[in-house]
Image (tube, rainbow, N blue to C red; front, side):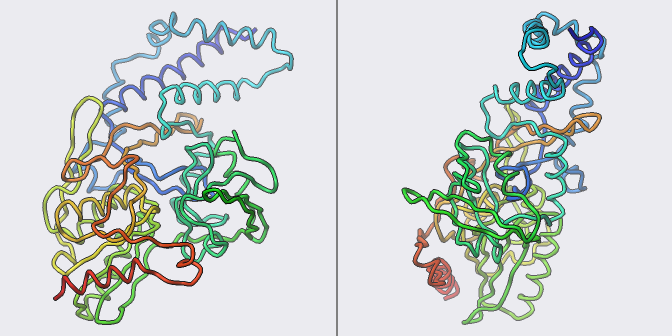
Length: 432
């Protein structure tokens, strides 16, 4: 039987987490981060940010939580929840007294309790991260890790590829959006949590991993050699017919600066039009999405955030965009997710440019990442939904392009790009 002291400490900890989630769900604000294969993350989530731009638009999540909880003393919390948590502690005692394999691991039980609490909300984007997972998630923001190089969704029954990174081992192995990882090194991954599946894919650069892929009705294996992955940000070039081309692959800390540098280099050559490629862009920070879309839209609301208490915040384009007048076409596909959908959705709604490609991924909720005290890991909690300027929700729906153009498996294999070809055709019509 554990002591009353241990029980009280754990009660305080769990109660604080519960209270934080309640307050954050109602009035918090967060920003989105990309989810990389090789990290313990899922489709990019919105997390707290502290840049000047964000603080001017909305209050920081830390301030909100602090204000909401400052009137609640730690001495009162266990009393408030004493009856509510009575079954929990009764079960805790039963496990410690009767479970066959003793001693049980209290830390594992505590983490399991938090996981179960968040899972009970029924939201696949709300979850707990262990200290190791939380550390890896934040390290991924630096844009380097060891793995196979793909953005993934870990929230379904199987890990699903959102998009392989260009030039990565995953891309060279032929992985495609919507591929499901059903086996690792010959072991069935059915029923295995996505975070644990990713741990199996992680590994030292130069080592091999055998991944069993389900693509529609087809099942096959690929052997991929892990590499040191540097997450790509921007590619750009001048195409024929004096058309500029920029591909943006994520919305990280340096994405805006690199995009502006690419725009400056291309615009100096006086192009007649611009193709902005957001295909296979797994997303990133929300503040970066606002900065990016502002390069193409001069003014007006570019996004809304809608909270559980009915409040809505609007985000307007920032002044100083470099490409607000040049004829523009935007490329999207099933790998265009979250922050990149914010950009594409605003451009489409405001009539700035048509979209070409196929329906985007459909990720439209806002998560806040909160570090637990004493380096006990972290929780990500869905606190809001974002809407396009016309008030559209894209969760599980995605953005429908103005011009639908498919990319077949044969196109991939033969190096053809009918979507880009259509974008060039549409852009030339706009220029004329």
